[in-house]
Image (cartoon, rainbow, N blue to C red; front, side, top):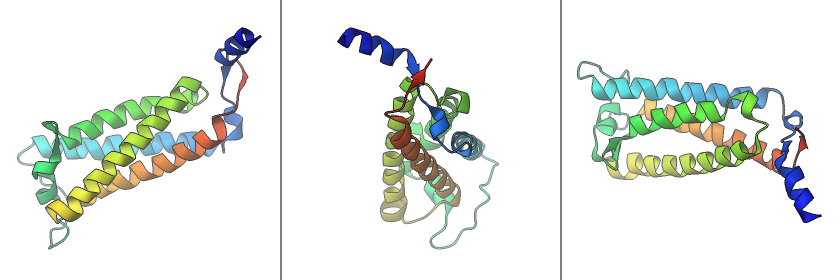
Length: 164
């Protein structure tokens, strides 16, 4: 009997009808916004003539943040990591894939990892670099919004199933 239950659970998909219709699309669009902002940050990082459209004062200073030692993680520019992450995230968050159980767990794990990384980046901005990048903050806000949406969808979908 346990074997038939295992087979049955593998042949089911998530009941995405339990979610508000707009939520998968909102998460997907936010992922694309993350791609756009990260693309701009990558462009600014690798183009010496590009200047970030960011006001500079004592606290707000995108150039100081994006050229600091903390703008690299394991030798890779954080903007490149963000771009790669948001590209993969856009695929994982495509609304037609929301019914896939395996992607529910991947989506949730990626959200948790991304919010942990954002917390480290905010710590670095506020306490190490002593400057804030508005473009980076945009990425942080997008990441937080996606995290909340994914967490909400996980809480609803984790126990749901529908015959495939």
